[in-house]
Amino acid sequence: MGKLACRCEVREKPTIFARSFSLSLCFECLQFVFSIGVFDVDDLILNTSGGLLGYCAIKLYSNIVNTSSIIQDRDIVEKQEFKNIEEGEPYHK
Image 1: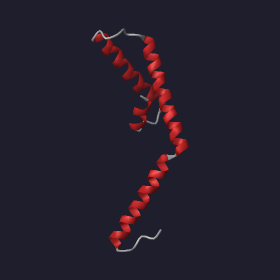
Image 2: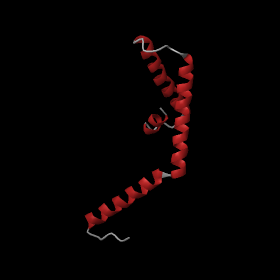
Image 3: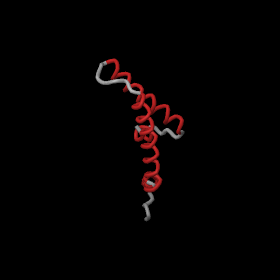
Image 4: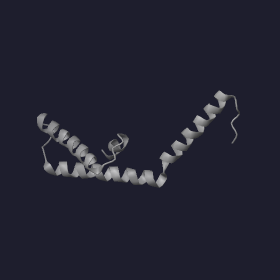
């Protein structure tokens, strides 16, 4: 759930909490409706906290690795190369 929240570009923790709780509640309701398992409040609490911890772990990892700046730098270089090709100028490294 934490990874899903990161992919959706969610930045606020209350929103992540609400999404994790909603998804967990949907799973618990489906278990009750289809008689697959038992509706348990502990599962809601644990799944929601797991979603928040997963989000924090992914954000921490992305801050350590800083992959976003690498991707941004690559995009800037590609745009510059494309601009130089359009203008007929060679790209100098």
